[in-house]
Image 1: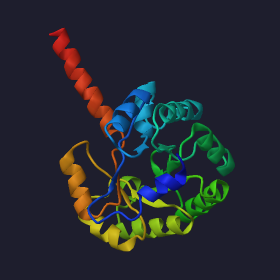
Image 2: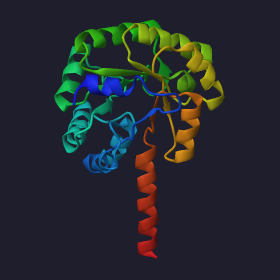
Image 3: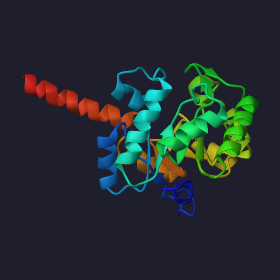
Length: 238
């Protein structure tokens, strides 16, 4: 699968029909989602971290890329990889490592240390370098962490999103944006907008109604699966 195939899934969709991308955390879960008929997948860094025994944000880069490669090998649909802030790699190194896994896209966040927003122009310049290194070979989903670590001002989120799309991002992802501000974001941002849903049909339907172009789930699916496993363990012990 190529980035062109993945990119095409984001465009020409009718209103209310977003691209829904389940978040596999290992090869087995990836096969489940692909066998269910989803046309593409998007890995969550937090879900993979949990599956490898790490806290979110502390997975060594080599282990993350190896996990993504196993997921890509397990399925025949396009896979995008959440690679956090790029692990301190140069744009060239980051693009090379991603392409080696077989991933056709990536999430890149604009915060560091899971606590502080990066300067938006500096982040835009870095995204432009990643785009220049990747050409059309990677779909770039630029995360906007204003609602996670910033002021929560929708105007700030829109300004960052515009900088990132101008730098070459294919899609922007205002993480944890409240649903009440989503119409403002949708009106102010050109191109695809990613929103995060809970692992249930009602959450997906609400974001589709609000105009999300693409829906992902973060670590929600991995946590849901672990919750179900915990319930099974309790029943067995009982």
